[in-house]
Every structure is written in structure tokens, then in C-alpha cells.
Amino acid sequence: MQRSITVDQERCCHCGLCVKDCVVNALQLNEGEVPRYVQGKEENCVGCQHCFAICPTGALSFGNKRSQDSLQVGYGKSDDLLRLIQSRRSIRFYKKEDVGQDILNNLVSMLPYAPTGGNADNLHFSIVSTREKMDEIRAISYQKIGESKDMPQVFYQAREAFAAGNDMIFRNAPAMIAVALNLERTIPGCEIADPIIALSYFELYAQSLGLGTLWCDWALMIAKKIPEIYAKLQIPEKYTLQYIILFGLPAVRYSRTIQPEMFSVNLIR
Ligand SMILES: Cc1cc2nc3c(=O)[nH]c(=O)nc-3n(C[C@H](O)[C@H](O)[C@H](O)COP(=O)(O)O)c2cc1C
Image (cartoon, rainbow, N blue to C red):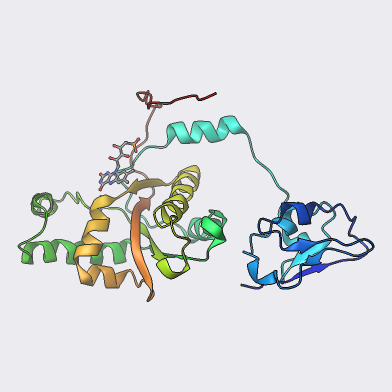
């Protein structure tokens, strides 16, 4: 990670917001100067770019990132986000066609915006993006289930269903995304949260783009139990598979939101 800030002397308004917002107190602003790293504290910088994002005049560049290349901050309409959350359903029926390249590009470009503990660069995503590849994975999975004696009982039932044309494990999805974690780069305590937050962002954004998604414990179990499937995910060394979401164009449409039972909530004052 590139840890360096450059401040345009002309544009800096000396407001000190970058210094105040630095999560590791690595910046200082001396009288008559522009902000800079406190000597020796540069190493503490986690690269969160808060200093860059908060600068009201765009005077601060972070590494090779320039303010003019950023988007205007916008939060959209909260009602729209709530309706998306309420309308999201697990999709178990998919159209035949592959997800288009433009949509895949959008999904990929969204991924690094999910937060990780300590802003760690600790996740890898493997996206199986064609039905052809998914069909290969399906075929190998059900074949290996047939050859194995120690799979969960449900997988033998799923194999029978597959022979009858019903893919209970991968739901006939044309694509899936797997998230893997590099433990060495992960802040202790964030091992579970980091990958799951990333896929939660992915799921909501994918559904906002008209895709169906399914968190898939069964696909995860298959990938962990069958080395040939794990290998197909091409997860880099030092990373371990954490979770899988199936996705694709949905072949079902829901007409209304559900009316879920309330979780137990304490409002503590
Ligand atoms: C962590 C997780 C794992 C899941 N694994 C599976 C799975 O293996 N197969 C499946 O059909 N659904 C799976 N689901 C979907 C749940 O069954 C589904 O979320 C739940 O029934 C509520 O339905 P909804 O997502 O449409 O609100 C999983 C969901 C979560 C959150």
C-alpha cells in the first residue's frame, strides 16, 4: 500500500479536518505549514484515505489518487435502500444466460468499497462467471459425491435430484462468487466479519442491478470437501475460502415483500 500524502499549498485551507479525522493520529498541521505525517508515524497509516476524502478543497492527494478522480459523496434515498433490503429474496431459479460483462464489471468495481477491520487488504474474490464453467463444477461435484462415502446425507439426495434434472446444491445458477481470507493480514477478531460484510455488500448491489443471489452453505461445503472444486476457484496461496454466493439473472419474480417476525431487540437508554 502506498502511504504518502501530497498537499497542494495553494488549495489547502488549513482547516485541520484531515488531521482530526486520521484514525491513527498520524498527521500534524503546524502553524504556517500544510498537513504532513508526524515523523515516524507514516508506518501507522492504514490507508483508509479519510484525510483525502474529508479535505473540503481537494488539496490533499493520497499516493497517486487525486481528488478530481473521486466521485461526489452521495447517499441516495434511504427509502430506496430500505425497499431494496425489504425486497431482497434468496433466488433459487435462474435464467439460462450468463451475467453480462458490464454487470460483472460493475460488481467487481464495487467490491473494494466494503470495509475491513483496520482497512486490511485481506480478501480475495473468485468469480465463476459463465454457465459453462458452472456446469463443469456441477458435473464434477455430483460425480464426486457419488464416489464418496462420507458426504452429508443431503448430498446423496441432491445427487439423485440432479439426475432427475434438479440441481439442489448450485440451484442451476450461471455464476458464483467465493470470498477468501488471508489470515496473516487480518486484524484478530475480524476473521468472520470481513468476508461476510464484503459479500453482504455484493448481494445487495447485485440485487439492485436486477440479479438474483443465494448465500450457499451447500456450495461452500462442496468446495471445502472436494479438492477438485476448491482448485477450480483458483484461490491464491495464503488465502482460505470463507463463503460463496450464487448469482445470475433470476427466473422468478416476487410480487410483494415478506412480513418477517421481529428479531429480539433491546433499546438501551
Ligand atoms: C449464511 C446463509 C447460508 C445459506 N445457505 C443456503 C443453502 O445452502 N441453500 C439454500 O437453498 N439457501 C441457503 N440460504 C438461504 C436461506 O435459506 C434464506 O436466506 C432464508 O430462507 C430466508 O429467505 P430470504 O433470503 O429469501 O429472505 C442461506 C442463507 C444464509 C444467510
